[in-house]
Image 1 (tube, rainbow, N blue to C red):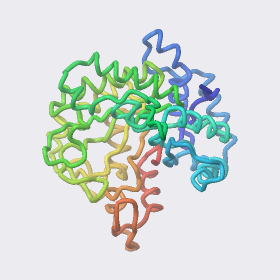
Image 2 (cartoon, rainbow, N blue to C red):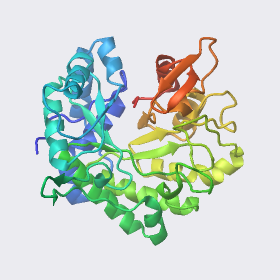
Image 3 (tube, helix red, strand yellow):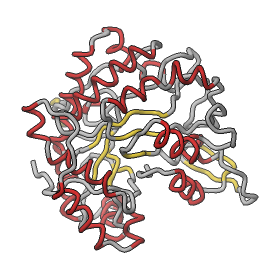
Length: 372
């Protein structure tokens, strides 16, 4: 497989320590796989390289480094509109990375190789690997003979792993996911889910969570993070500060967690504290309003109080802050009133919203490094 010589540049503007962290982990993949080393410490050479690349970028291109659109891992002919969109995003818009969606291993790898060759600045590629690399790279069938083409390992949902209470299995899932994901060109897993399964009416978490016990979630999450990052893949804990105790679907509507601050400290937050202690490279935001942390009508994703003040300041997280998908109604519908709201039709229906541009501005002000 082709591997970019310099594997990661921070999507942030001037946040060189974060960029060096991502670069250092990617560069140390093979070494950590044999030595058992954890998070790579950024080297002077890595930091210097990041600084030198950032110095060549215009302010507009630095801003573009924050943006990661989604692309499918399927075969896409050169003359198709889908491929023309990808080429434009890389060559014209100069985005910082992509979210790689479903496709077969060979097609995904070939596509990512071509995309990396098109990009002046190496792309940082993430994928939703909650159930292993097979969750997005599960293969397919050759027709008309229905020959199984094979795919990456597809693990059960995290609740099954939670039922084992086995941190060694969690580590092994992370290890296998990292090796398979890196083989096809993905650098970052949007996993593990660190939400505690403490509301049976939750329509969107459920089996994605390890368990209803925050101590068990914390232990398994930290082990899976180490399995990923000790084998060269960046891990992402999600959805901060906790998506478990809600009965709304943040894809479809405004979402709230109305727990007290004391309850958040004892249930929702321990898995994230454990992940930070384990050196998790990224944390993904929750598109939900949490009055105990911020009394304004902003979802956590758009709240400087939650993202910068609490996560960065109080909890001491220094890695990448990654938004959940910004086309979700949970973030598009609930922002500080501007008096300019209009009816917007998106992937999840029609809502009253100030629009994606305003939401993106608020996400950047809140301190996010990557806009999905």
